[in-house]
Image (cartoon, rainbow, N blue to C red; front, side, top):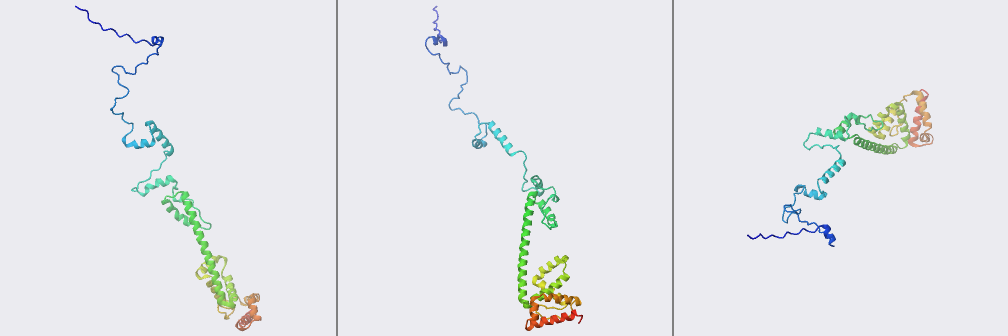
Length: 298
């Protein structure tokens, strides 16, 4: 029986040392994986690994340039630090109005209407501010917002009051000028007659009442009213310049005082001493009547 044919054994590859001694560079290990090992690179045509994000967030990931979950967590931590945890929930349109109370309180609204400290103009009794406080509270205004609104309101009211006062003064001057034209030469005498009655009846405590009367009647109407009162008290010249009969309310002493006043009235003395016509006759008649009263006559 013949001996079996033996296959020559493959000589082992030279070692790195023998290769180097033979003058050749050592052989590099083969990258071919051992039999049975899974290749590192998937074969062509295979499906890549599933992304770490869902398709819904694909655009957001691309926009933020996140490369992985760590980037997302870092971004969220930064956002929370920026915004903070102290947030105010805004009520829905369908919520009751009372749901806004928590919002207004968190924003700084005083606890109760009485807690508002509103600016009050000088001379104001604070009644308007007390009336407005509940309204401001219901509207949810903070103390600062209420101050801004109240200050603007007070300034507007003050400006309107100044404008009304200026208009009243301008109208008053016009009415006085009209009265000068109406009374003519008798203007000073008639005004003095009204002034005498005014000083007698109008005290400092009546200033508010007088202001109301002048507002209602006008400057001209107020002067005429006191002119009539003065004429009713004694003698003098009323609107048209006609002499007024009757005794002077103060008697002889008042008549003497009236004479002294007329002596200091240049217009009257000119008419009395040097005038002609009706003005002179009226001045003479007036002085004669006063002189009789001063002497105790009728």
